Amino acid sequence: MHHVDVIVDTTLRLQLAARFGVKLDSGIEKIDQPCSRLDIIGPASFEPHELRSGEPTVDEQIQGADIIDGLSFVQLHHVLYFKETMGREKDVPDVALIHAYLGTAEHVRSLMEQSRT
Image (cartoon, rainbow, N blue to C red; front, top):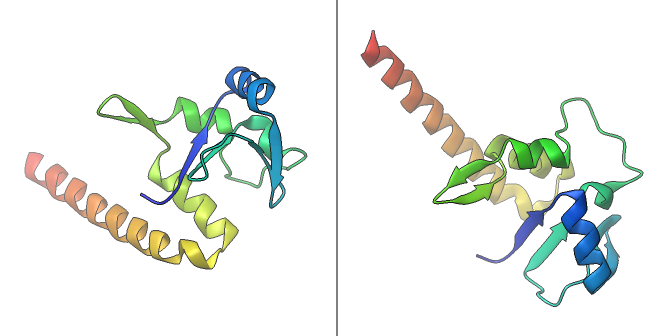
């Protein structure tokens, strides 16, 4: 794993900002913590950003997270939305992989539904 983005609610973001401070990186406010492979962002990280139609809020991403082995993960369709919207070259392999996975997952769901009928 090369890099992890962690989203936190407003309360935790304020606590972390008080402890570590904040930095501005490509227009996004992040917690200025010492680990270079970790970015911590919260609802205020994108202000005064206006949400685009269909764009999930940080709170929606947290509330709708998938729980895997007891850990919370932003749903892949949200990750895909942001990676496609940002249009960064470094995200192209991730976008292709997510599309392939989601297509395969949808196919498996379809087969399972067919087997129930």
